[in-house]
Image 1 (cartoon, rainbow, N blue to C red):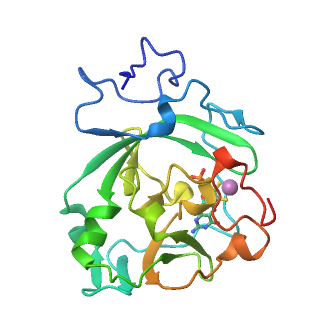
Image 2 (image 1 turned 135 degrees about the horizontal axis):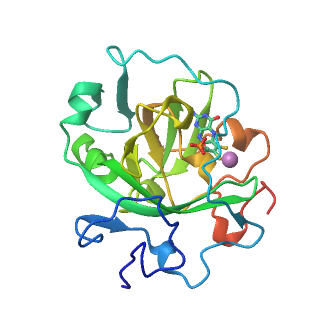
Length: 222
Ligand SMILES: Nc1nc2c(c(=O)[nH]1)N[C@H]1C(S)=C(S)[C@@H](COP(=O)(O)O)O[C@H]1N2
Ligand SMILES: [Mo]
């Protein structure tokens, strides 16, 4: 797998990520970053980081923040922010594609591997999907369990070396790099494992159930 480096890789967003002696050390490299063309059909590249959400930025009190993993698991988990920050951490280098057509390449996320958390929760065999909830009430998204278990999926609290601010979903957001960005729940607070697929906010409004940018899965009938 090719090494990436802000100096030598023209695909990298110059100046946007910290430079390490060996930037791949301890970093999970999302496989889509290794494609020759990293921008899917119908997308254009932006070097900015747009802010996008359905309603408004929720007020979150970090002293009462909670993240729950429940549903079809043997051991439901709930974390305070303090407990979340003590979990084992990973870094992920990944691209980010919004269905409104912008793609932000070369993001360095840091946080907690979701597959590690789901292992701790002991997912039941009947679980096939997750409903992901967030602090902007009534907003959810649905993600197939298999997609959440990919090694580049994380609950992130930093982006390019900075804490994720409220606009971008802080204190903690989900990042699912291989699917369109509406699956990357900002202000995440609940991951409920289910047997059946329960379309979320955008999915009910007509967006594709799965949302793979490389398969052009923008709208339901795509
Ligand atoms: N909780 C929540 N998460 C959300 C959204 C939202 O409205 N609520 N919007 C999604 C959409 S459509 C996109 S493109 C990304 C945008 O993330 P950003 O604002 O950090 O760029 O967040 C996603 N996560
Ligand atoms: Mo989006």
